[in-house]
Length: 123
Image 1: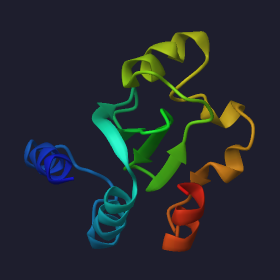
Image 2: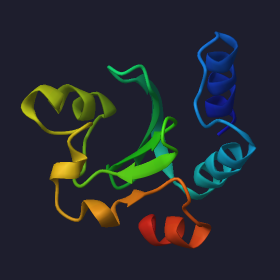
Image 3: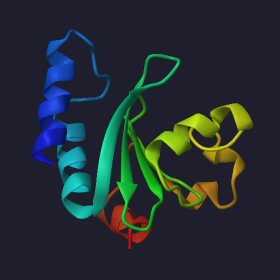
Image 4: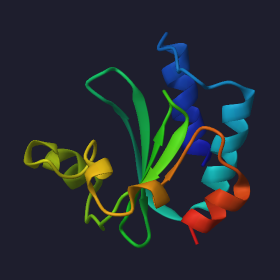
């Protein structure tokens, strides 16, 4: 978790404005990082210039934390590598295409998520 926060601080210092990274969001980010077991992480700037944090979970699913709209999304299927999740965009799968997969409404937390909702998603 400390490494992620250090990288995020570096991104902020570089002049990239992280939309939503205020006290409320920082509190939620810390809660998420303390309560998700993950194997690796990656920051990613999407085509729109928005910052995302991908967490590769122990069950091989991907948790995407979107800094623009302050939501957290859980991938529908498992992925062996974070890069695969990104590379499949050209095939209409992976990152950016979760909304097309079943149960999307149950796999996304909006900007006002509560710890209870978070715990239900990542149980």
